[in-house]
Every structure is written in C-alpha cells, then in structure tokens.
Image (cartoon, rainbow, N blue to C red; front, side, top):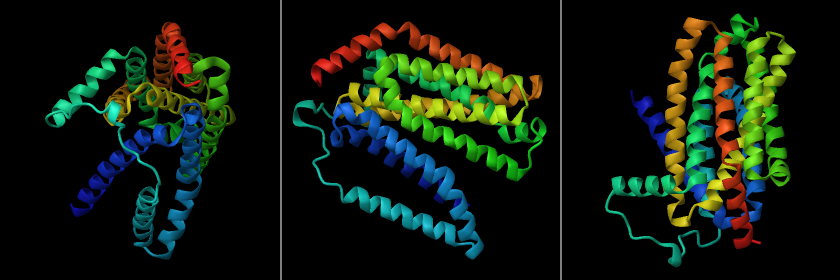
Length: 310
C-alpha cells in the first residue's frame, strides 16, 4: 500500500513540475525560439525515455533490486537542483498580475473562463482532448495487437516500440521547419492528417515493415503536434494564466486518455484488433478538419504575434 502512495505522490509532483517547466519556458526563451526549445525538450525526452531509461533500468536491476529506485531518486534530486540553479526572475511581471482568486476552485474557474474566450487556445485544448482519445483507443491494447496480429514476441514488441521512437526524434527535428513553411495552423493540420493516415495504414496491413514505419510516422506526428500546440499556448497565454491554462490542457488530455482506453477495449472486443485503428484514424481526421476550418484564425493570430514580437 505504501508503494502505491509513493508512486501516486510522484505522479502528482511530476505533473506540477512539468506544468511549471512549460510555464517558465516563455520567460527563459524569446518567443521566436519557443518552437526550437520545445522541440529540443521533446527530442531529449524521447532519447532518455526510450533509449536510455529502459536498458539502464534493466542493467541496474540486474545489479540490485533497489538500484533503479535509488538512481531514480537521485535523478529527481539532480533535476530539482538544476531548476534551483536557474538564474533569472521567473515571476509574473507586475503589469500582468491579476487579482488573486479566492481559493483553488476560483483559480480553476478563472483559467477555464480565459481559455473558453481565446478561440485558438480553446480549439487546441479541444483538439488535444480528441487526439488523446484517438491515441489511446489502439494503444490501450497495443501489446495484444502486436502478439496476435503481428506475431511478435515480447522482445519483438520492444524492438517495434524502440523503432517507432525514432519517429519522435524525426518530429523534434522537423517541427520548427514545418511551422516556418506552413504556419502554426497549417503545420498542425498536416501533423494531425499524418496521424490519421498512419493509423489508417496500420488498420489495413500486418506487414511488419509497413506497420513499423507507419507507427514511427505516427509518433513523429505526435511530437510535432505537441511541440507546436505547446508553443501556441505559451505565446498566446498571459504569464499570470500560464499555469492554469496548461493545467486545464493537461486535465483534458488525461480525461481523453481515460475515455480512449475504455472505448478501445470495447471496440477491440466487439470489432477485432485492427478496426479500432481505423476509428482512431477517423478521430484524427476530424481533429485535422476542426483545425482546417480555423486556419484563418490561426493566420490572424500569427500576424498579431509577429507585430507584437517582430
């Protein structure tokens, strides 16, 4: 029981830390470099999470059962020290400070109200929730699909995930270039369309090479979407609202993951293991369509940002 409490506390604290990091970044990096900064963070996370963490964890566990937990604790301490060493007044500027809301509920309501009134940020929150549902529909049973449809062993499944993680590195490299070429709105539409196409391809074949490439392209789309949506939110949101708007976006995403897992399980039981990929692809196509309809608003917002931050 104690272990569950510890891991739940770690999850909550990590959410606070991640939210604070996203909120601080716009004060540490000029607006025109946010895309690159977010892409560098995403690329680093991909490398550490997918290529460093798993083999290191296995090596440490082979040395001693407690070693992975001990090293993880040390990594948390090192990360906290690195944040503590940051130089700069990372606070809300006096001219952007708002009246302090009375209580947590009032603060949440204030953040939700601001988000609802900003059409571009509101759209991204809604699309983020929809994309989370679509992502989790097939990923909730991915290991079962890999075993039954692709005939992969546990080792083969691990290799498939490692290969797909290369798409995350690709996404982190191309995200800022894609934004410069197509603008935020166009790049986000392109990324979501790629996600839809990737899942559509996976639903139609069991060819391992095709599936691996499609899965890597799906992960690439996810990183591009995350980088650009985060940059838009950071550039559009006042510093005083950054934490609340980011927390709302994260909450909607987590609710989407929960709903997607439930829907994915039902669809897989009723329609088989491949059809849910097609359903998820359709949801990504819907998300791309919602953004496509608002391209004019994206362009108007970008023009305004260019005037304010030439």
